[in-house]
Every structure is written in C-alpha cells, then in structure tokens.
Length: 562
Ligand code: HC1
Ligand code: SF4
Image (cartoon, rainbow, N blue to C red):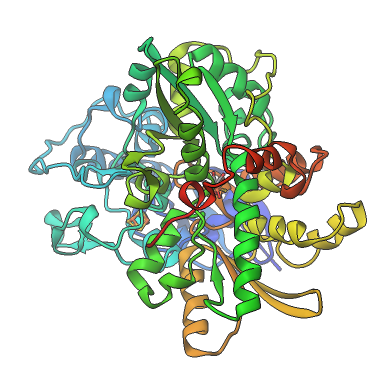
C-alpha cells in the first residue's frame, strides 16, 4: 500500500499494476486507445501521458505506482500534447464518420469530440488501401487502423494465434495478416476478439442486416428467428435496461413486431445437444475410445482443432452445435407441404458470435445439399436493426416464444457461460432433479471465471476427469498437456471466447468487469427461474424424439466428418 498525489489530491494505492489504474481509481477517466487490462501493456498511443512534479512526462500505463509520486494529469502542457496526438491520428485516418459502421462507438471519434477537435490541421498523405472482405465474419479496413496493436495482442495473447502482425516501418507501418494474405486464407477462426478490442472501424463485423430485411419484406418467405442464450443478457443495456438482466421476453415481442414470423429459443436446441452429446460421451467411455471427448458447439474452437490439432479431429463430438441442430430441425419440419403452405423457410439465428457466420457455411451445416441456417446476425446487428425499426424496446410487454419449439430448459440457458455445457451434461447424467442434486452439480467445479478448470466426478462408480476452458490460448495449454500425456481427461469443454459466449465477438463491445459478471449472473438467474432444469425433462424434446426425429437423429443432429 502507498499514497500518491494526483492533481493535488492524495490517493491511496494497493495492488494496482500501473499509475493509470490509480488515476482511474481516483475518478479521472484518462483516455487510452491501446491499454486494456486483459492485454499486455503496449504503451503505443501515449494518450495516457502524465507529468510529474519534476516536469518529466511518461505514459501512465507503463509506469508502476510508487509511494510519494506527484502526478498531474491535466496540465496545460499535457492537454496540448494529448490533443496533438489525436489530431495526428485523425490526419492519417479515413474520416467518413457519418457512414462508418463504428460511428457512435468509435473511440477515436469520441476522443476528437471530447478534445473539441473541429478541424484537422494536417493533410492525410496515406495511400488508400483496399478492404479485406474475404472473411465470412469480419471486414478489415486498413484505412481506419491507428496501429494501437490491440488486435495483434488479442489474437496472440487471448487466442494463442498470430493471425495479425505489424509490417513495414515508420509512416508505412501497417497491421496485416502475414504476407498480406486475406483473412480467409489464414488460421483465423473468426472469433472476433480482434474486433472487440479494435477502438475504431478497422476491424468490424461483416453485417447481414439488409438480407434479413429483404426476407422479412418478402410475402413468400417465412422468416424464423432463433435466439442464442448469451444474447438475452447483452441486449437490454443498449436500451437503458439493467445490465445483464435477461430481456428474452421483450426481445421476442420486438422481433415479432419487426416482422419475424416465428421466434424460437436456441436453448431448445441446446437441450437436444445435451441429449445427443451425453449419449455419445457415455458410449465412448464404455468403449474407451476417442477420449477425451471435445465439445463441438463453438465453431471457432472446432476450426482451431481442425487447423492446429488435426490429430484430435476424431475426438470432437459429432454433435452439430445447437444453432445447427435447430436450423436443421425447423427446415425439416417445414418440408411438410401442409405446414409450409408454399412459403420458403428462411432461418435467421441471432448470436453473440461472429464465428457462427462461418459455421453456417461449412459443408457439415448443410442437410441434403441445403444450407440449414440462412443468416447469422450478431447481437450488435440486432440492436442496430431494432434501432432502425424505431420500436421502443424498453417499453415492450414480454412475449413467449412460438410453438412447437419454444421452450428450453435452464440447462440450455447456461450454455452461454463457460462451464455451462458441462454442467448441463452433468445434470443430464444425474438420476434426479431435486435441489440438492442441482446444487451439488453447480458446485462440482464447472462454474467460475478461471480460464482453465479441472475436476473429477464419479459416475456410477467410474471417476470421470473433466476440463473446462475458455479462450483459445487456454485451449492450447490444455491440448498441449493432453498431447504430451501430462493430463488425462474424459471430456474437455472449450469455448473460444474467455468466459464463454457472453463475451463473444459479436456482443456489444466495451464490456468491463461489471458487465461481464452481470451477463454471467443473468444467465444463471435465467436458469434459476426455469422449473425444468434438465434437458431430458423438456417435454418438447421428448415429443420431438417420438415424431420428427424418430429415424433422423443422425441426419439432422450430427456431422459425418470435420
Ligand atoms: Fe453460444 Fe451455443 S452457447 S455456442 O456460446 O452451444 O454463439 O449464447 O448459441 O449454437 O445454445 C453462441 C451462446 C450459442 C450454439 C447454444
Ligand atoms: Fe485472430 Fe480471432 Fe481476429 Fe481471427 S477473428 S484475427 S483468430 S482474433
């Protein structure tokens, strides 16, 4: 513990890792473009520069707090310096702010406004570069890059990949994939974490909003929405509602008003996944083959295994993701001419994830040659579409999902948080559903924000070793341990984004610690208020196995190969 003086006020510090954190703790929002508590310190943007009592200036993100320091954050000299940095950044930046996809959320735009920059004195001499539109999930616009390096560090440090890097020097410096290859030709898994940390529009979501409006406006098309677990706890705060509270009921009402013909909950299909994956798991344990079983609901993780650990492809569960299962089932349902009434069925899945846009294009997400999910909209896009429609989200009455696929168990809801798939599976394997059993499963070790968790559960006399990890860099650690024989697991659950889908690459960005925990708690709360908490007790699922799925479980719910 120590004290420093910031702008004339004494401030205590304890374990803050840099002066910037102490300044922020003191209630001063010092701007930064390249500092993120989850990434390593880069110190490139220099916006957090402060001055000490000897006139020395330094980047506060890169300096450890020391007892007795005297800091000035807003001296005339520092203010001038900071404004100059932003002006210089703007001078080398494309400035089509009104039409930029990041408008209103761009940090550079916000800083220009905050520093009252109304003209830019310098000429942009940078040559205009082409956009990289090769990825199904993301668009890279080098003209909007400010070289903060956030994307480079997010990809390397959180995801264990090095898809992006700095090239050239001086005024020619750029961030690109190696050899300036298009993203689609790299090991990029479309997770969108680079986009989450990008302060400008240099990496943005590849949007599909217009295709959805076109489908909605077509009277011959039945437009069906499925809503992923993590979306419901991230939409509300965009409309002034409590952070992290599930707004599923309002979202269903708004989607109906926007023109979606039917609205369903992906948690229904998460229940299906649990039914199939549990069966597959027990089968593998019994035969002692293809263990550890690797979960397969996260498409970025599936691609990571296929690219980085191809020798483990057979360990991946053959279950399609809940998104994939739902779309295949609903398309099959509407194959019946009496139901379809000559309308085309168009499935839109609303997801927290950019990689889901890639998943739907993979050949194993087609049934009988037809693409199962037509479009994936991220949470960010659906918020924009709601704004576009002018509907007052906050004042909507809640509505329930449609039938016959309109209900998912609480186990399906927790898929959106790391450990949720495992917990849902443990519930499925349990013989009863009483509170004590559910509580014991909740405490078994799957919950918690840690990047890697491991624990053992006993199932009918056999000890099963479980590993749950989130973030692909953590997944890499786990896989290296498995590969080398240091660790032996029966099942490994991986979600590519840290903390799970609640922090997916398609969620509204700028989510601090409070938002992260609120989203997590929101999903646990959604589970808590659902009376059916086991997938195998969802009556709609049981009915489906007796009817539409009778002889089609493999065809509609599994993939043949990765
Ligand atoms: Fe997810 Fe899943 S939990 S992958 O994170 O298994 O995207 O929310 O929809 O498919 O259910 C995402 C979330 C989502 C699938 C489910
Ligand atoms: Fe790296 Fe993910 Fe961005 Fe691809 S989408 S460049 S894998 S962070």
